[in-house]
Image (cartoon, rainbow, N blue to C red; front, side, top):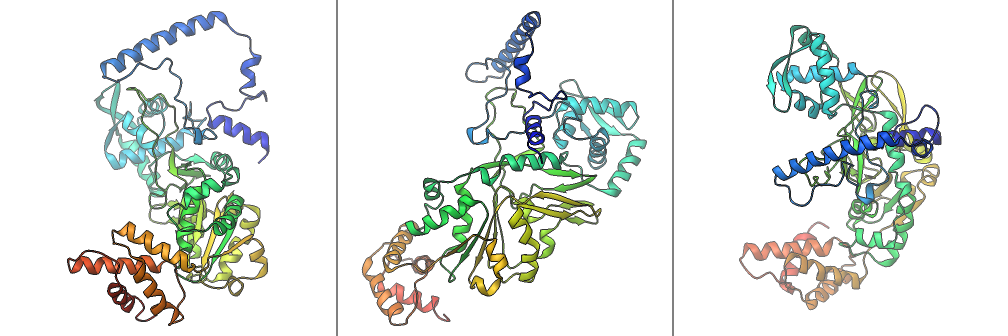
Length: 498
């Protein structure tokens, strides 16, 4: 996408919109001559609006003074780079009246009847746009008034003609949720919130991994890899925290991001927001009775995503999948993880063959874009903007060839802890789990059950052994404490077949 087009898209999403004369929408304000008479009239109107808002807030018992103007509240600093502003028309939302009409008719077919504001909340568009469309649909005898509703609204129900049309729409696709966002707007949002725009420092990494015992050497190796925003191999023996490290990587980047609830592409609707993999973080409510932030409700603010998949990964999860009974398509994992982290855990043990996965992603890892096949046969180009982490207990050279390893610039081995780190882990786990700590039993454990047996240390073992001691003491109603006897008993259970 050319830079000017991208700027126009971001300007439109921010509420300015592209200009047909080619001028910068913000610079054009400075080029126009002021109309002083219009300014006086506007000031008078603003004063009336301010007085009305102040009276409403006072009647509602809102605390604090009324806002000085009706301007939208300033967004949080971290989101200043991208904030979706609600559209001023259906065309500005990159939608057609027919698309919104189909959503309304299918919603009323399922619901029976609903107030105009309930319909607007369902499709996530401003009520003023839906109210105008509902009046048009009533004139076309698709809907009728069932009764009145508060705030100069009506309850709407389908007519016989509207019910028949709604059934035809539902036969093709049953979706009647949020109005979709265009693919072009989604691509612009990913570019604005891209990981490549984030540059975590050593302080960011220390905060992200503050609950893990990682040495300075490991953090210094992870830092440049995370900063690259590209690919990362974590390999090493099991139990040393590769998955725990991968889960916390996203916390080093910006905390939140905006994604559309669904995307529309040539009549196909793809659901992107997934409550299983995405954690919604709503904005703080406004201070007054009326929320003056003009946020496009078709977008949802989420915690920057971290999606983890393991041995259950199949090729179908990397493509757009359509439910044939509903006609609704679901976005693949890599699309849901854009602007975040996608962790392939236990790499090499997936249900799909390794060479299939590598061939599928060898170009996206290099070019940072992907091609997806839609159910209607069309192929689309989408961003591939996430940090891919491959976590494996196997030797990477035995899994993949040199051509693929070249596209994963960072390969980091997660090694066993030292004896000092092993002691420190026991101390931390005892404090966290409420077990009385003593150093002598740990020395006995190391001499008896590690050195003599030639057994390597693992980062997970102090936690697992201390948990066994705590559970044993709870069962026998005894004080939880770290003793030689309890450790010997825990080792007998834990290493029985290891």
